[in-house]
Structure formats: structure tokens, C-alpha cells
Amino acid sequence: MTAPSAPVRVKRSELSASGRGDPGELLFRLLALFAGLVVLAVLALIAVSTTQEAWPAFQAEGIGFVTTDDWVPAEGRFGALAFIYGTVLVSVIAVVIALPVSLGIALFATEAAPARLRRPVVYLVDLLAAIPSVVYGLWGVLVLAPALQPVYDAIGSAVDGWPVLGTLFGEGSSGRSFLTAGMILAIMITPIITSLSREVIATVPSAQREAAYGMGATRWEVIRSAVLPWSRAGIVGAVMLGLGRAMGETIAVALVVGSSAQITLDLLAPGDTMAAVIANQFGEASGTHRSALIGLGVVLFAVTIAVNVTARAIVGHMDRRVRGD
Amino acid sequence: MADSLDLREERVPLLQATMSRRRRRRDRLATSWMVASLVIAVVPLALVVGYVTVKGIGLLTPAWFSERISVRSRVAGGGMAPAIVGTLVITGLAALMAIPLGILGAIHLNEYGGNRRLTKVIRLMSDVMTGVPSVVMGLFVYTVWTLRFGLSAFGGALALACLMLPIVIRSTEEMLRLVPDELRHAAYALGDRKWRTIVKVILPASVGGITSGAMLAVARAAGETAPLLFTIGAARVVNPNIFDGPTTALSVQIFGNAQNPFAAAQDRAWAAAFTLVAIVFVLTLAARAVSARVSRRHGR
Image (cartoon, rainbow over all chains, first blue to last red; front, side, top):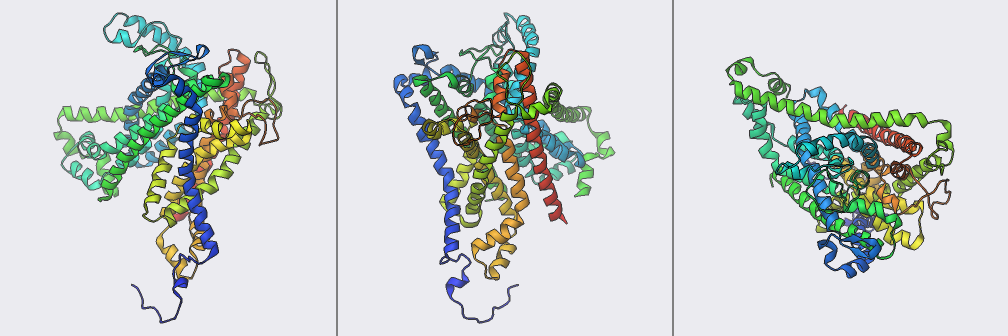
């Protein structure tokens, strides 16, 4: 392939394309490096500056900031446990609803749909991600919540007094609740989980798939025996990324969750999440209250970073396995 | 390839005949689950778009695009011009900051970074940064900018730029990775410096994909609300000074009016939502069109 080069005398610096001596080259290289470092700087600054602003609240409350649920700004008491609980509960509801739907769509788009339908399916689901959070919130608070209220009432009174369901579905609700917020979030994280799962499923070697078909397996049997075992880790990663997104979602949840700091197993009761509290209370907050809200941001940041890094690690491990390292 | 697809979609009758009824029923059940999932996802999409269109389109008169925002939430009237201007200005400013920086960052990762540890850290952290909640980004800009320099369109743009940056970096890097090494080698062989190769050869070769990724990031940012709540404040008229004084945006107007009990205000929220969704969809579809055109060109 390589032809022998003609014996021309050139200086080594001219040969190397990196051109270290060139001032233009140096400037460009430094500019690119600077741009990359901005990412690290911003992440570090987020951690430092928000912690600094939240310090008065952390100092006043100590560990009680995350272990008590007593949030009374007027009396200077800031226990965020109810909001942490709400954040976790609402996100888990969202994932429980979104996972089967997302996985169904991802499998449909990769395994079941006729070839010419696959791309439109992907576009359609991606459009779900294009709608802004605040628009989902608007629809949730003005349309979905009022429509759900009679449904919730009916469910609540039907299961009243039953052992488990009676606890999960209490009576009386305005339609704004943990469950409503979880549903709206489920709509919002479905496109993320779907597209990541789809990418993972696409890496399943077709030989594996076709071997299963060749043995006479039905489509479902192929999915269960060849597709899902291969992509399990990647799907777990996708779900965790969806969970991280759900925990940080703010505006839609702020509108439909009902804004009530309480820890209850009643999914139909109004609740609150960290992100929603920040959005709803920041405007009228000052002093320690404001600092406590920024403190909620710090906790939220730490939790979402942890969830994200774990998810990336799982997905990265998956990538390496696919490349065969 | 085509053969295998055919096999998969139209099962051989012989196999079907010998298949036990239970296996066939399970297979059909699984297929209905997949189709049902798609329906479950499409229904809310249709409902949201439908409601926003039906409830929002009525207010879209010339006055909507030209008049200031009314202070009266019980009475219809006024326009949304300051919010439309605000959304466009803030998002545009954010794009001006994040897109060049993001492309440079991607160049560092793909062209200069090699396999060094720093490169891997930056790549991982860009991924992590896409997961930072937008409300946290708003608080961050509030603490480093708004507390010192006050509410302004620029503060909002900073927050949106921070949200866009990692998206632009990662999407651009994917596109740079697709540029074949032959192009790089050919440019070097002609004696080009590396940076000239990047600017003259590699970026032009991937401009379509980069544009489409950047537009998707802009579309995402245009719809953001939480980061703007703490950084731009509230206003009812256009604020010509982007560095000083409160301003407003469509998303912030939707959030405020959605919590208002009066019908006139809620109507404004719907119409603002329609305007915002229209802007975002146009950007998204344009991005798709750009990437589709580019991939067609490459396919040829």
C-alpha cells in the first residue's frame, strides 16, 4: 500500500503535522483545551458556589437538614426530609410507569416493526422529548389533574380499608398528587429510556438473534433468550439516567405535585419535591430561607451526580463489552 | 440482510403449524404489549399538542406579537411580545456562547486529546454535566452572577449556555468521530498544519451533523424555565439592555399564568405555550431536515 517516499531533505518540525512551533497552532490548541476545561471548571464552581451560599442553612440545621421533615420558613426551621422523600417517590413512580412502556417501544422499533415504520416511530417518541417541561406542567395542572380527581376519588373510596391498596390510595384528593407528578414525569423520561435502550438493543449481534430464530424460536422467545440478556446492563443504565432526569425535573412537577411537605405512603396525597420547592419558594424567600433552598439544590446536585456517574459506569462497561475489550 | 428481515417478519407457516398454542399466544401477547406501549406514549403527545393548539391558537392575533404583557389577569387583552423577544434573545445569546465553546471542546476531545487521562475525565464530566438538573444550573448562575450583577437577560443566557455546552460537546464529538481519517492524512500530506486541517477540512466535512446537534441543544434550551426563574426576574415590557434589569421569557410567562386562577391568564398561558412549542418544533424539525439531508449526501 505505502509507496517508498522520495529522499527529500526536510526538517523534522515541518514533517510533524502537529506543528508545535507554529503560533497559530499553539493558540488553537490552547483554545480547544480551554473549552474542554470549562466543563470541569463549571462543575467545580457549581459545587463550590452553591455550597458556599447554602452554608448558613447547613450550619443552622446541621445534619437535621436532611434527617428532619420540619420545614417552617417563617420560624426558621428547615428540615428537608419530606422533599427528599417526595423526590424519590415521584421519580420511582415515574420509572415504574415509564420502564415497561419504553422497553416496549424500543423492542417494537428494533425487533417487531416493519422496516419502513421504524424511523417514524423513533421520530414520534423523540417529539415527546421536544415538548418543554413547562408545557407538560401547564397541561398537567389545567387538564390532567382536574380529570384525574374524580378517578382518584373513586379509587380511594373503592379500596378504603383494604390492607395495602387502602394505604397507597387514600381518599380525597385535588388531583394534584405524587401519582399525578409521577405520571407527567413518566411521559417526560420515556423518550430518554426508549432511545438509550434502543441503542443498546441495536448492539445485539444479529448472529445471536438469527441463531435463535433458526432454532424455531418465536419473536418473543428470541427477545427473551437473545436480546434481553445481552442488553440487560445497558437497559439498567438507561433506567438510571431516566431516574436522574426525573429527580431533577422541576417545573412540571412544581405545577402538579400539590406543594405539601408530607411523608406519606398515600400516592394520591399532595406532596413536594426538592426541585419543585426551589422553584415555588425561591421568589419570596430571603436570608436563611433562600440559603436553605440553595442547600436543597446542593443535595439535588449531589444525588443526581451520583445517579448519573453510576449509570454512565454501567453503560460504559456495556460499551467495552460490545467492543470486546 | 433483506432475507433475514423477511424471515423474521413473516414466520414460516410450517413452524407456525407445529408451534404449541401457548407459545403462539405468548408471542402475540408480547407483540400487543409493544404496540400498546407505542400507543400509550403517543396518546399524551397528541393530547398535549392538541390542547395547546386548540386553546392557544385563538389568541394569536397581530396584537399578541406586538403588544406588551397586560397586568390584568381577569381581563383578556395585551400581547406577549416582550416574552417572545426575551426567549429569542436569551436563547440566542446562550447559543452564541455555548456553540463555539462546545465545538472547540469537542475538537479538543477528538483531535488533540488522544488517550490521555485528562481527555477521559473531560469526556466523562461532559456526560455528567448533561445530567445536572436545570434548576441547579439556575441556582449556580444565581450565586455566581445574579447576586453580584443583578437580574438580566445575560444571566439567563449564562444558565442556558451551561445547559447547552455538554450537549454540544458530545454531539459534535460524535460527528467528528465520523470523519474518516483518510481526510486528515490527506490534508497532512499536503503539508497542512493540524489546526488548518481541522478548520478547513474536518469541520466542513462534519458541518451538517454539528449544526443539527447544536439546533437540538438550542431547542432544548428555549423551553427551559427553572434556570430563568432566578436569573431574569419578571418584566412586562421589552428590556433593550441585555446586561441590566429584569426581563421575561415565554416559559416563565407560562409558569406564572398556569398558577393563576383566572381564565384570561390561563388563556395567555395556553397561547404562550403554543408559541413556545411552535418555536421548539420548528427548530427540532429543521435539525432533522439538516441531518437527513447530510446523511443523504453521504449515502450517495
